Image (cartoon, rainbow, N blue to C red):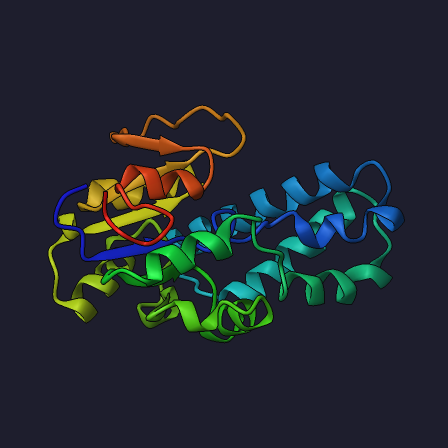
Length: 229
């Protein structure tokens, strides 16, 4: 954790709860809401990887809608709920420690950014709806390079913008494939393991894992006052 100049966060699943859209509709969906939410997320990710391999790019919002269509059919959810779920996806809830953690980091000299599959407009709406827009220096979208994570061109974006070395970046993600993607690229990747999951075998093991973003403050040795210990 030496010589860090930028702290970069994945958005979906790391800062924002991807299941919160379905959870807000659980009274209508019923007990299957969580299984449906997980299926929607898995299908969404599969579509990003498959489209990257096929070189048939669609932006993340189109993929989110396509994966929702499949998921609603798979879980027999009334099609009348589609627009409600999509609108809720635009304003996903942040995890409860996000605002406090970002504020502490903001008081230091780190560059703070999001690096995400999301479109620029989706990311902009997401941070603004949660009053986080003043905490980030940049919102990097894969749309700048037209291919999804974990392609190296995505991880290049902050390096080119900030003109820093790969190992001067702390990259945080709750997605093990994304942690591996960033780590294999050269970032100091940290796994945000909120649910006690098992790490994938993808030729990278992070030196550090944390249960939530609060633990990042201890990891990089910053007091809650914002001062280095």
